[in-house]
Amino acid sequence: MTENRLLYEGADWDFSIIQRSYDAIEKIACEELGLEVYPNRIEIITAEQMLDVYTAHGMPLTYRHWSYGKRFLQHESSYKRGYSSLAYEVVINSNPCISYLMEENTATMQALVIAHAAFGHNHFFRNNHLFRQWTEASAIIDYLEFARGYIATCEDQHGAAAVERVIDAAHALSRHGVHRHGGARPLNLKLDQKRERERREHDERMFDDLWRTVPGSKPKHTSDSATERRRRLGLPEENLLYFIEKVAPRLQSWQREIIRIVRLIAQYFYPQPQAKLMNEGCATWVHQRIMQRLHETGQINDAAFLEVLHSTSNVIYQPDFDRPGGGPGFNPYALGYAMMSDIERVCADPTEEDRRWFPDIAGNGDPIGTLRYAWANFRDESFVLQYLSPAVIRQFRMFRLLDDTSDSALVVDAIHDDAGYRAVRRSLAASYDPALHDADVQVVDVDLAGDRKLLLQHRTKPGELLSTRDAEATLRHIAFLWGYEVRLQEVDTATEAILSTHTANPPPA
Image (cartoon, rainbow, N blue to C red):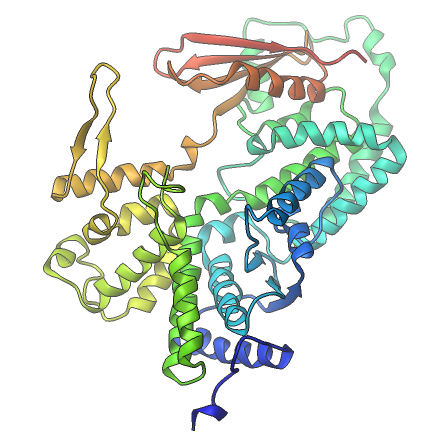
């Protein structure tokens, strides 16, 4: 009797099989798991088209730049030589949510990645607080279309080389081009286009270089002028691209708009590395649960479910620290899936240890509701700090090393006891803190009425200084955009002592 209930048999697929699989998966995802998703758009693409998607950081379209061509050639060469494989899918945080599936996938893999991407990732994008606060899924595709058209127009008007130079500099600073506090203003294409026109018209109406020659046109300096000018400029400012876009004296309006485009796209990607563990763990748990339910209800056969188990096992494999691919850090699929599964276990069948560690959720009988709450309200750092259990710590054989440079030996200072579990959990959570991954560089002063020298500070501590070569290369990009000298001081956060200084000047006009 099962032959009429099977969604498909064998490895081959067609679009009717894709539709039947999608409908069955959607029913389980929405009715049994209670997932809330954006409308889905499923697209089947070739291997070369998947390489194109890689090139644009997973986006369906983008502006032209040499770095994308370089990335395409790197991925293509690695793929053709057999050094790497392509993803089964790519999913985009947009409304509708776009999922790209590889045409080389088997029927089972098409069903699995629909469950993984179109429902697992999609639910996470729509409901997680980071993505809700920092991205506007309904506007990103239109904005990318605007960005591509605007930059193409700039290339026609000002030359490809001039536009490329601005994009190069903006890309170099994109990690320092995001607002990290207070949320992002939603993208609005019509307002952005209107604002760009108004800014250009204002510049044309107000600018007159003759004012520079009028005697007494420069304001007089007072004893508190430095404090006052920093207050007016809102300094210190950690968003370097934003400050340059708004304040740089020599930038033309089209250059400011290109900087803004790079900055807003960087802002769109800002939440993703902060929730990678949770995002992949959520999607993997969802696809495994859905495919298991399809097997339990007789909609896929044993052969298909074995393929699911084999694929999931490969994805969640965690190599030992001394094996290829084993370090540093944990496979986000492995640890994320393990933690999601552990939460399910704690809610349904807790031990006495679980009841001590998680009194609020142990035995509550609602694992799916508990998971949905976690997916919505945490990022990787807080999720690990809240939900990493002793059971998972033991499963992954975690411990903590103390690396004291004054000691000739490493010391294991956190093991598998209550104090050790808490220490391991705190340390692992701290490793997901986004503040640890980017240097704390801020604009601290500039005298726009004087020499216009831009002063930056890197807040750090001895032994953690920037690479001189990288710092000076990046400063040259800043100096190009700023138009005047740029100085970067590396400052000891504890003592305010200046540890190092880097300087760059703009290229000759």
